[in-house]
Image (cartoon, rainbow, N blue to C red):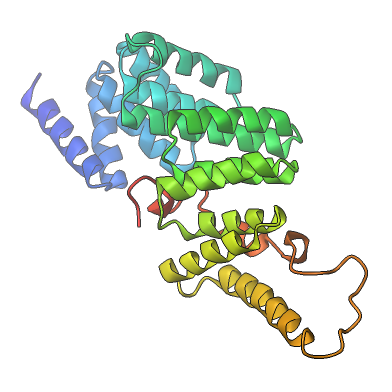
Length: 282
């Protein structure tokens, strides 16, 4: 390797590590003018193109990176994610299977690999959901949480799917798993409270909403739900000392059907979003 090429490689890697992508790309493309045989150069350039939204360009360079080094796990994962972004779900699964085979211990991956693959499953789940394939979406999210059970945001998304299909028992399990993975993830507590209310467990719902407010005092959903439940409780207490007012048919106390879930769901971090839903986050 001549000194000029060595300098370009060092420069490209330094700019890349500092996320100075324009400068990194300039240096890396100059390296490729000299030689096409550095797998990490192709991987870095592909990441830059992917970040820019050029998925086809990223695909070409990721494929070249893994051609040069078939055991390049990071490039394989990046290629799988890019295939997923391009809607090539079968190709993404094949790459995923290839990573698992090369690991040497079936089912065991390092945390970085597990996280990226879990996100890939979650993206596929969203694609299935957008296509109206709810059962397939649930299956993909179950794979995601199996890989990363301490990712609270993944557990919340699975819980939302169970809730939307009317399976409140499994929704509760998922929300409890999210709360246990990250006790300070307020959206999980808000949604768990709503599920408790749906199951007729109002006291447990109030506990979760109050805890959510202790974590996030400005949480509008928790404030709203507590005000509604406590207001109806106070109304019932007042009614015991006066003539009972007629109760509208089918309405006796606060129910989950009285609640607009949109705010609570919106606060649940999307995949790849705010880290408060991840393990150890605040």
